[in-house]
Amino acid sequence: MAVKVRSKRYQQAAKAVDANKRYTIEEAFEVLARFPKTKFDETVNVAVKLNVDPKKADQNLRGAVSLPHGVGKTARVIAFVEGDLAEKAKAAGAIAVGGADLAKKIEDGWLDFDKAIAHPSQMRHVGKLGKVLGPKNLMPTPKAGTVTEDVVTAVKEFAGGRVEYRTDAGGNIHLAIGKRSFDKKKLSENLSHLLGHINSLRPQTVKGNFVQRVSVAGTMTPGINIVVVETQPA
Image (cartoon, rainbow, N blue to C red; front, top):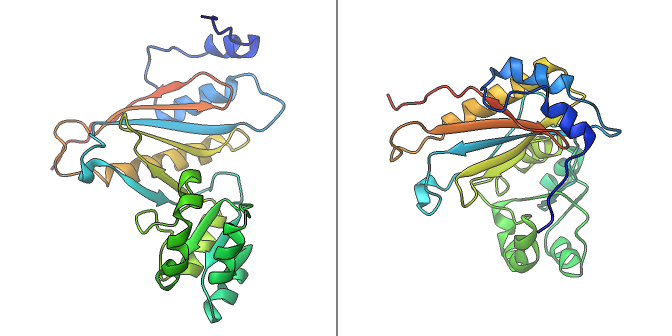
């Protein structure tokens, strides 16, 4: 088996972080700022290890959250909606709107978008697209806030960087929280907001600490462990 060799840039960055230390949020982004830069604006990602069993329905967490400063990317959003709302959704930033016609376009192979929003009345069209949208994680769902009567607000939020999350098989949540070009204050506020949101989702059946580990990293950098505040039930 081949041994993975880290780049000189990565090795240099690794010397700037103590892998055994847990940093405050502010300290973590000060360390991240000291890492060597790449030629592109790296995405800053967070990994959150939760004390949950995703096999249990109430502990398989899924949803969406709008971060205070966005994530540095504008998403291409479509909306399954008709009538007056369709025009409003377009004005809010949707790159395509429609009902059966939009569903047909997707069935024919068009997938040039990042997020699909649907009004509940349109699920008769959207439901037929499960085999196409499901594997690409583009299927609208109420849990993620992408099936909603307030289509206009959803389009605005997702086009502006509202992000979806869900626990993986190991009970982890992975999310982008910005770009390395963001200043430390914006990254800190985005992460603090996200962790506050996650803490609010604590299932009543969870015993002990809910958030177990938090780590942030750039696309090409080592991870930086964050101090976790214990979240015991009241």
